[in-house]
Image 1 (cartoon, rainbow, N blue to C red):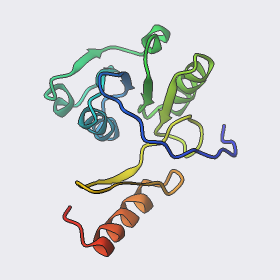
Image 2: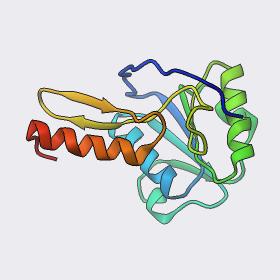
Image 3: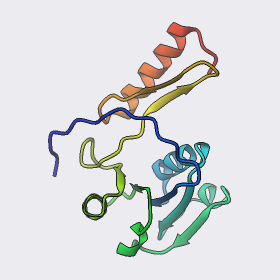
Length: 150
């Protein structure tokens, strides 16, 4: 269910914000680490959760997604390999004015993660409109161009 969307670039303080990640695989792990790095309070819900996620010291529940899981959440990440479930989560979040990221679409979501660079002087975010490999490639080129330490 792809549509033509444009995304407004915005930096947001996630400190203490309630976030939900539905899914427990490798992509979920990357998203969780980003959220934790920026101070979010993360709940993970999935039938299968990687041991690396369980070792992060965050709240997790080994079960399927419930509609009520999005209640009082600032941001939800639909990080399952089930495209239909992810789209249902997006629909629920959009109906309830909750920001949502969907790993199985480039546009069917309301929030995108970026490849980002943090230094003492800069915070630079790169988006290749839903193509993470291209974002990471450009991030590396920017680091090289600015001669920054990784």
